[in-house]
Image 1 (cartoon, rainbow, N blue to C red):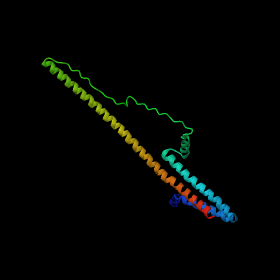
Image 2: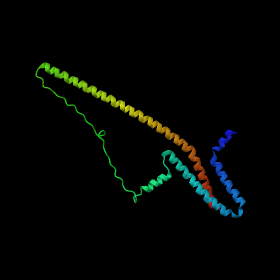
Image 3: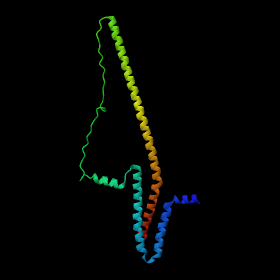
Length: 197
């Protein structure tokens, strides 16, 4: 019996719509001489209530997905009106770290006159070249390690953002659609009452 109750509860827009229609019919049957006024009042009330429910559902979805609301969107739009908003100056600064960096190595060559001096100079230059290669190799390893760290951080952030969006989508699909269905049904019922009465 409990499973049947939960199954029925999932279709609350249907039951709520049937209750609204039943309440309308009960009022019309109780006061048949004022049916035109009752139908007109119910028509307006149902259309307004349906529209407000749909707006509330959209506002809830905006709040859930973008942490925004219809009121904030409208107020921001009004604040951005060129009649009373001043243009803002944008200052762009470039940091020295972001600017292109160039390095150069100044090699000092000594002029050797004898063969032993030339061999010594060549050995010094080879040692200097090895030190430079080691320094560049170490800098490259550090750069790769830093890039790996940044990449793994970004991947973790992206996975977290995807999980958050999936959760928000599930919540939106489960909660918002039922309110919208109920709002649309009673708005259609109200419009039908207004047209046929």
